[in-house]
Image (tube, rainbow over all chains, first blue to last red; front, side, top):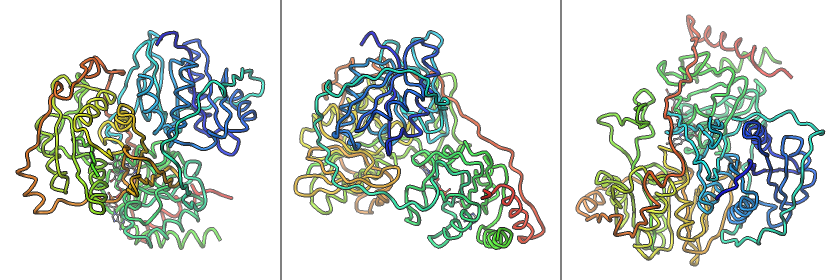
Length: 332
Length: 267
Ligand SMILES: Cc1cc2nc3c(=O)[nH]c(=O)nc-3n(C[C@H](O)[C@H](O)[C@H](O)COP(=O)(O)OP(=O)(O)OC[C@H]3O[C@@H](n4cnc5c(N)ncnc54)[C@H](O)[C@@H]3O)c2cc1C
């Protein structure tokens, strides 16, 4: 494929607004197009896209590709892969960016397979190499134990999924100008072979983990479902959200939507309190953006202490009830 | 039901960070001595998902992997869990293949096997953590795919897949043949039984070469790679940890309380 130009961001929306990941990707794309001196474009699909398109422009898109159809209102693995492929063929970007989200994790590999593109999943850093002919992506591998720096092939389209909070949005401006290109009639209808028959959200109490300023997370050391009541209580007293590791999810003590780490959420609170968490790299990779980390673990050699600012080497069952009682009296 | 499960041998993902080393010159991981390679945990769950279907509906499970003779261990493990046949695809021309080449090789192997209703893979290999191969296999075979399943059921010649999303669950219905990748939420992989281990030990495991699966050599190996690994480094995230000390747990708890009071959210 020749005549590749520019960077295409695959947009994700919710309730008529761009998702934070799309703001981040547009910010990242702006940095890159500054160097290659080309355009950043944004793909939007679904319904009632005009206001979202304006938002995309104000967050840095030079061009918006719109595919407005009820066919794309909800995510479907077949229709989205088909659509993104179709738009890539029309737009011919050098680089197509998706979030490392439900959408990106599933669509990026299929689109790459169809287009013969290169692929890097879960990138945390992205730059243009000195020749300005290829991109250099950094991604965690081996569960975060190592970082790999990977270059794309010059002259070949590259598709990357990017981890949340790895790129910064620009400050939006309504004065920015952009062009809107309607591709609705240029994309053949998709063939849907994976039919969605049911969808349910996991009941999540309280604060969104990814936005939380304070998180209290319990790990395998909590021991049982009742133990998590202590974690919830502490989180409430501190005005924070509850998080967890893989072990309590596997044990069925807490829902998987609370899992933090490589296969869960990426968090960046001001305060992260890790209780009964060993500090496996797959978990730690998701909390690196935390400003201050406090760990409570009965094993003084636990790895979590190596990545913490403050440590309490003790049984949480001895410490938390006392702390909770004191906090209650202090706060009320 | 003919089920094929793709499995991979990897460095133990539970290896403590202190034992994890890389050769910076060659950008390769140095496997620590004496620590055995394991079956990718997500692939073990894919085998489990296949066994659950077989328990209910009957059928035949074939596990397939790419690698040298040493990969026999994980194939025998899957056989001991209850899979019926094992198969290794091995050739020096496959060395340094990327995810697309690996997907192609598996698809060629699966085409040679011929009959299949369902193909199962792990959601990603817990070494390079790409999560790409399953999708590539599905694209080469032209079959539908759903990723990150927590439950896979075959009902009336179709497959029902419940999968995890970031904030919930989705259920899909697909016609067979289909490919499903499996996530940790599926549960626990069963342990091999004593009898399973005995049976698996003597089972013959064929090894197919690149030629036998009719490999187009332009699609495999390093030269076919669409990306190039430039550097592999071990990052450091260490912070200086100050430990709270005290006479007893009362004192320690009191000190922790005041630290938390400083940093809590004030309404
Ligand atoms: C491919 C892959 C992906 C993964 N992705 C993720 C992911 O995204 N997120 C994730 O979290 N994990 C993930 N994991 C799992 C990860 O490797 C670890 O197994 C997991 O994080 C361990 O959780 P834990 O530290 O809470 O539990 P454990 O390993 O069970 O550790 C419990 C800790 O609690 C301490 N403890 C026990 N009792 C007490 C007590 N009474 N008081 C105080 N401390 C106590 C122990 O000393 C120990 O350090 C993944 C694994 C793989 C292979």
